[in-house]
Image 1: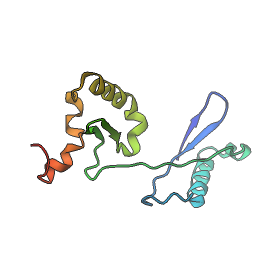
Image 2: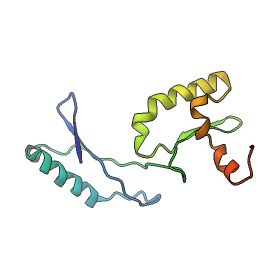
Image 3: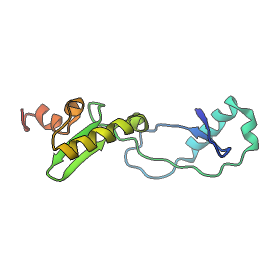
Image 4: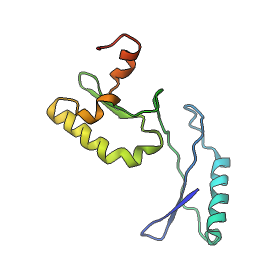
Length: 126
């Protein structure tokens, strides 16, 4: 677990990773594990009220690399960052904007384009 103090006095406790596919049901036992781990780090958290909880998907590609680039005319992907999405978001946004404005794929994201999967299968552009 990790703890992140917020300016408003709240404390964010995170995070878990479960391999549940696209199951959208909330996993209360995972929340219990986080709470227990947080109390081990900072026992005074027992005095705090839990005000919200949430979960989301952490998509990743078969090769564990992000997918960034044009899929087809009018469709651009910026996904599959797995656990690093929040860290990679600023650079991904900058490179995506550059690609959309200039109409070309920046060098930094060429190895992450969706076409790598069709090229690997021998069905895409070489």
